[in-house]
Image 1 (cartoon, rainbow, N blue to C red):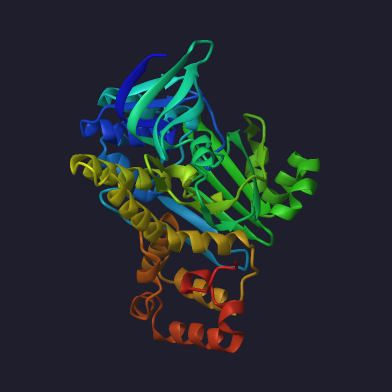
Image 2 (cartoon, rainbow, N blue to C red):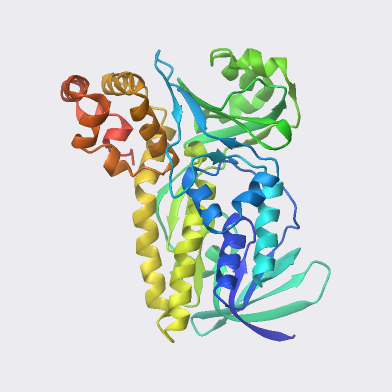
Length: 431
């Protein structure tokens, strides 16, 4: 079997893998990226690229290409809390970006694969990985085949698994999982034409979260999340239960029914939340292969972009230093976990569908009265505003004023911190 040498082989060429391959190639490294899929092709997705992810596309010189696909920018969003308070605002600017985009994966993934090739990476589509190749306990390559072709062996200084939450690479190296959470939610979405929209829309209802955003080709994606235990009943009559949920969201149901469903329903209960050890001798993990998060907060694509940058910095430094790759990858682990943990905790709280308490009501009522406060809150949800900065006493005082802050504090003390403290004030995630 022929043997060729690369600096890095990336297994998986969707958002995490293609971004990683592109950035590594831009650093002058010899990169091979493989994927069993051929592009363009679809995959289950929240679609959302939050503002920090858009800032990365801007920095990488790819935002104009994304806009050219027809995916519209969403700058304004409306959050209906379900208890009479509606927050309407704009995403705050972050590193030159001020909008969220919700592209179809058929276009986003193909765009990134093209960018990886342009940077100098070799990308093989329709490639099946059979096994990893080892020298002792160190991964030194892989063995696989172009579909219908002969087996080949490829070697590299590092093999990166970017092949999703059911990662072949992670399974082969027995990557340790930690902070594991079984699925808390299920997800169901489809696309609609002819739906009147003026921005993004979010709805919180008992046992439901709904997200509605414009996507490519004039379509609207409407996403419904519910508790994992309700999945069998929901699946038994998907369309009726989906539309019943939208009917409970103000006039959303009527607007959707006035349009036309463009495609079939996508439905899945396979939504765990897990950190995996993202490196070992000769291997690393990025994207959902290393950190998968319940999609209720729409962070997956942005996380993949962030972690691709963190990993590439570590790999480039490790290969340049001659023998310090493992040390640099340990730094990647620390930086990834520090960056991911606050949103991981918030996501677990939101995925629990805990009913709003007195503190939630006081906080959101106070926020709704101040446009600047709403914008900063939206920045927290997008990942552009650090949670620690938002919930600091000085910042909250400036956002909502002393009287509202006193009411929030009183509600918190009277109700008990764990039971009623809102997620954004630092209630611990249920474990």
